[in-house]
Amino acid sequence: MGSETKSAIIDATNSVLCEHGYAGLTVQKIADEASMTTAAIHYHFDTKAELLDAFLDDLIERFESKLTFEPTDPRDRLAAFLDQVFTPSNPDADGFPVAMMELKAQAPFQELFRKRFRELDGVVREVVGEIVADGIDDGHFAETDPDEVARHVATTINGAHARHVALGEPLDETRRVLENALERQLGWRPESGVAA
Image (cartoon, rainbow, N blue to C red; front, top):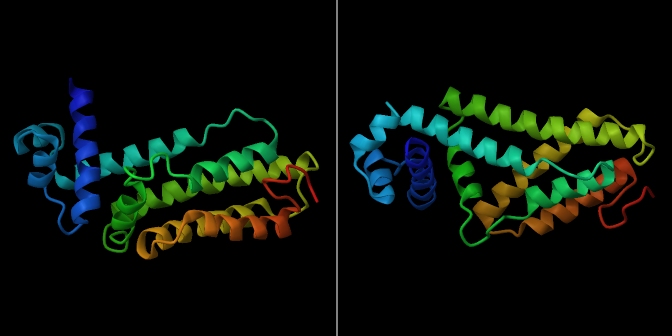
């Protein structure tokens, strides 16, 4: 019951954050969305900050779980990675990009958020860096600095999601631009499957 209730609170937080933004995020609205009392929420989370920390934990865990790939070939892993970050699981219901944008906007003022987004950035950069290093070692990618490619990919992902949320730009447009850049850096495109 406890984990189900916490999960319902996290889901409700996501919904309220997407609908009302950070400024409109209140424990009362979360309680209303979850069909429970504010006391039930405070039973699980002493403060709103603690709740948002748990919410960010959930977002990071969901994102990390999407980055577990079965393919061992670095080319397939990189293609799978791009599929995961540029393809929403449920475009009509997935509020992940909006929720992330709302909380990222608070990062300059909330050290907790800044810390958590650094963690998320670190996950992205580590995964991409390992894929690129493996691809170079296997002779599939051109010699380059894996950390530099990882930083470029992480920055592009952040920009893509910001453009998607703020401007309504489709994610596939930025993915195409990133793939063109990866072709120049690595000598490879996801649809080609082999080094150029």
